[in-house]
Image (cartoon, rainbow, N blue to C red; front, side):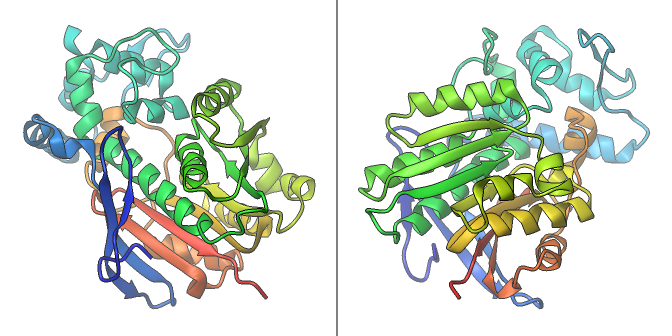
Length: 357
């Protein structure tokens, strides 16, 4: 269970790095679920600019808190211009100047798509699907900001939980995974690669997203990860096919998936829609299978930078109690839920194992 008291799981986050990921302070909460704090090593720990960038971002966040009328950046109607509030000196510090040209391009052309998050993985010197090289100042932000570290820690934990769960499966029977609102799908594809390298069962992965550009990117990424998994891509609006209706459940069949993940979607759902999404995702999950989901925390650091510095739209933040309560409303027994909170403080990740009756 990735606990310090028992053992450490070793994984590779970057080529040549062997890093330990483990949890501390497991606590049973009032509803009966387990809450774990997770230490996830990150490239920011080796960053020579971490302290100065972290302090600068904290100061910008404080400025935003002290000035609640400052407005987040907007994009012009023709999508060609980033419009900044002249009073918002915090936002201007992020986007104004020749040294942050790639940050402006990132905000104008990639946010809020999943490719904006893929950029934070820092797997390339260029912004995804562009010829825009990431400049030094933008790289500092992508390396050291809370959001960037959290996207990487969320992905690392997701890979670890999937690989750990899959290690106990029958090595002959093919596993079926589905990633809902998959985005670039890097964590799930890298988890499949790791399972294969460990000599475990073959993986069949279905990647579902509403954005055809992102699906093309995830398909190319799957092909670039040597033999990671058999994969297919499905363009689908989950608000129609998993919330308003259960179209995908009917298409694939109830309890048909050994692993279901919805890691970057619940933040964009009001409570009722989130409950429907969790209910239908749990219906897809096979007995003994795993459902993974996540939500940004209400008490997260650099919150105002996220809301009115970056200006990321439409995110509903929740406490771990609120997230688990949504799962309970979806018919999930809280005793089958483990909640993980990386020490960067941004996300709560839920691991839900469906019992074998």
